[in-house]
Length: 357
Image 1 (cartoon, helix red, strand yellow):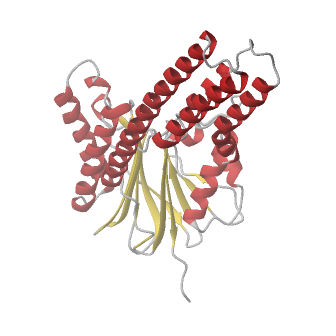
Image 2 (image 1 turned 30 degrees about the horizontal axis):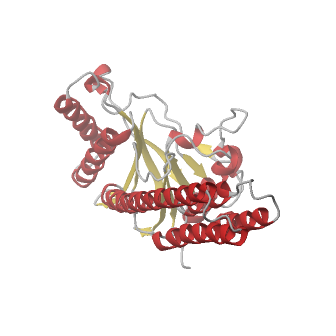
């Protein structure tokens, strides 16, 4: 904020310095570059009127200096005035282009925000006895959504969750995310078994690859972990399809990675291996928190190339507030990387709501 204010003062400072320099130096030394710089500096930061006034002030100040020196009729004076008028006009053009670009960017961000709310709506803070929080941190500046995804849904079979990462980037990945999330919401309601929900996602990716065709059709896949917390609570069932293992956080204990006993292929690649993927069940105590995330978290590197370690970062502290937990993780990852994350991160935390008694 301070640097931005200093830049806004720079056009006036250039005019003042140019005036003092002109009054203290011989007439043959031109100070026009200082005055010409003023409207150019103003163009990105001032309004159209502010940029115009800066150019007019610089031009009139140079004219006044020539009047004071009695050189207004000389060739140097005409050259400097024409230069200032030309530069001021150019500054107005730049200002107009920047303002239009800013309006287009604001419009694009509004569209992106609407897309994010439609594809990855924020889950409710409380759901069937669970406290829930979700975050999406995009690596690209001004981007709001990419190839990472999550969804949380209260179903007749319990609260079901999916967190995953689509291969690829850009609009193609966003389109795949929309298809996967939509399929998950439908299957999560209909299917009794969690592994059947994963089968639906497999079939959806296979059909999407066939529809798209082209060279990348055979490489359309996504890593994901599906979780189910029954209405009675106490346990969590997981189906892991080539995704980083979720963490179970308990007060006074180091985080526990809930790794699958058998590694399964990502969604969209089941045809390469016919082995069925069965859910694994783990205790979820009332004081416990389940943290699911994409590999943007564990692959975040510091300046020396060291990966971020959430197990070490979270320690054995009591992480019973999902929103506060995710705020801490996101802040800590950005502190670790310093230069900024290089891959998107999707995170979800779920904690059984404390017993009111």
